[in-house]
Length: 180
Length: 112
Length: 162
Image 1 (cartoon, rainbow over the protein chains, first blue to last red):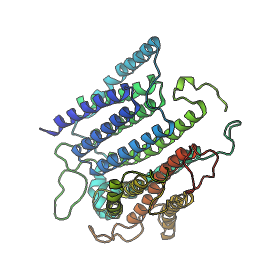
Image 2: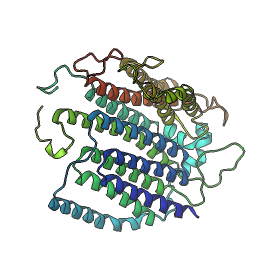
Image 3: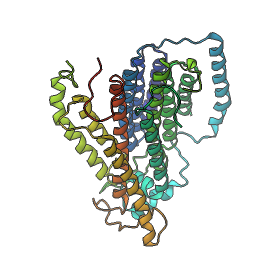
Image 4: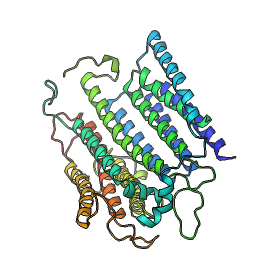
C-alpha cells in the first residue's frame, strides 16, 4: 500500500478515537482515548519521514497522560455529571458548520500532496552539512540557522512552568483575599 | 487534498470539545486534540513523494529529502504544548479547590 | 499502615532497579548524538525526566535515593537558561552577531564536531528535564499536602492524612 493509503487510515482512526474521547462519561477512559490518538499521530509521523518528531510526540503523549491522571487523582472526580441545554448546543453546532463552509474553499490554493514549495529549504538542504558541520539537518535548522526561535521557546517553557509551580504551592491563608 | 480536509475535520472535533463541553477536563482534552491537528497539517505540507528523512548517513547518497523547516517548527511547538497543558492542569486543580466542582458554568464569583 | 503501602508492589520495585538506569542512559545518548542521529536536546531532556518520574512513581515516598528538593531543580533550570545565553553572548567576543556558531566545525560525522551545537543541546536538556520533573513534583506534593493540612512544604516528613 502506498503512503497515502496508510495516512488516510491513520487520520480516520484519529478522528474516530477523538470523538469517542469527548463523548464518554468516565473521565479516566477519555484520557486513555486521547493517549491512543497521540500514539497514532506518532505512527503517522514515521510514515511522513520525520523520526525526530515521532520520538518527541511519543514521549510527550506519555507525560501528558501521566499529568492528566494525576489531576484526576488530586481532585477525586471520576464521572462527568454536567449536561448541556438543547438550544445552546444547536447554536454552537451551527457556528461550527459556518466555519467549515468558510474555510473549506481555501484548501484549493494549497499545493498538491507530495509536491512542497521548498523555497527556503533548498538552501538549507544544499549547504547545511558544510556550513554547520552537523549531519542532522533538522538540528542544524533549530540550533544554528534559527537559534533565536529556540531561545524564545526556552523562555516560554520557563515562564509557563514557573506559573504552574506557583499555582500549586502552599499559601499561608487558605481563603480570603487573593494574592497580588 | 483529501488529507488536508481530514486534518481540518480533526481540528473541528477539538474545537467542538472546547466550545460545548462544560467539564474542564474535556476542555483540556479538546485543546490537546486541536494541537495534534495543527502539527499534523504542518507536516503534511512538508512531505515530498519519494523523499527520505533529512539526515545524512555516512556512505549513502541522500537523493531526494523532505522539507526540514516545518519539522523544526513542529518540534518546538510540541514541547511548548507540554508547558501549556501543565499550566491548564494547575488551574483546574485550583478551581476544584476553591469551588468544589469541575463545572465551568458554576464558576461565577470573580474574587476569592 | 502508611509504611507498608508506599509505592507499588514488590515486582515493580525489583524491575525498576534495572530499568531506570537503561532509561537514563538512553536519554543521555539521545542528547549527545543530537547532531548525528535523530534526537537532540528536547528528547534527551524529556527521557531523562521520565526516568526520574519512573523511579518516584514506583517507590513512592521512601525511595532508595532521597528525592530532590524544589530549590535544586530551580537551580538546574536557571543554569540551563544561563548557559544558553552565555554561549550567545560569547559570540560577541569573536566579532560575530548574537548566537553565531563560532567554534571550529571539525569533520563531518565526528562526535566532537559542529561547533556550539552540542553545548546548546546540553543546555536545552538541563532546562527541559528540570522543568518537567518540577511540574511532576509540584503535583505530587500538592496532592499529599492537602490531606495533611497546614504542614510545611518540604521533601520528607509528611504524614499521610487520616
